Image (cartoon, rainbow, N blue to C red):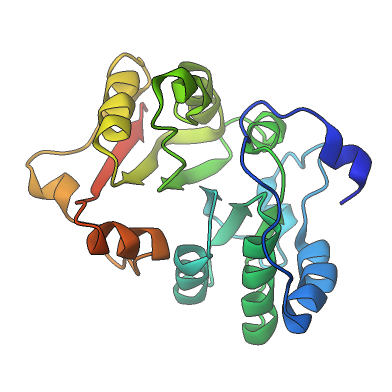
Length: 233
């Protein structure tokens, strides 16, 4: 990642890029493994997104802001036939996942380390089987709500790249962000909430491994919500 690229203004990333110093193994994995799997948006996207992966997967999922990488690594491990794209601008998180990929030899993950809106605009139309957005920054102050990733324009982006019937999954422990997401999706013509009863959004999805952010929410007495929306056929 060049300093020139890092210095460009972003549409949807407002957080810090780097934390404490990396461990040697993580720094090595960041420089080799992550670099080898990093998507290059200066090149046109392949018309067949499966060509990004050696095993040409029939289904491809995107996780935006994978944090510690627990969820992404878990599903890449348990579903080797599926292709996964993980977006995470925070260097330490990218390095941690890269080390796991290196240790376990995962071949079904591709990475992107900048603003997710750029990736969404680069991807081909109707190319994804699912988008996951788990515990995004809630930007709790009202003056910062415009920074929340769920927005009318980003839902339009989701609708463009998701296949008909594909899902957008959202998890958060912040009630105002959950309500914000429900309101935005409710007014979008191409998404519908899939909950039929309260248990559907109070219980995590099948095979859910949990994340560090979820664990923190439980420790601090907050109850997460798990929302699934389907892209119209």
